[in-house]
Image 1: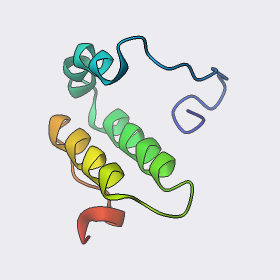
Image 2: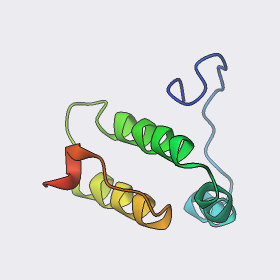
Image 3: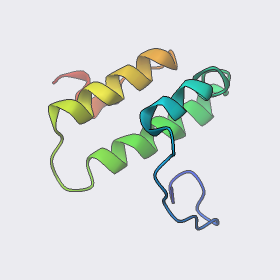
Length: 80
């Protein structure tokens, strides 16, 4: 969150609908300008790499997000 909103501290809370909560945000996120999409993908990449390792599930989630947002995969996974 700090990558996207450096001046705004928000506590994490699990969405009531779990992963289904994402269904409502894909179109608005895809409508973001390219720089905003880049920041979002960078923030996701930082989050999944925070522990120093990237699981298959994490990499597939990032690939899915990049596909839905029509943006390139970060270099950290492009060759994996």
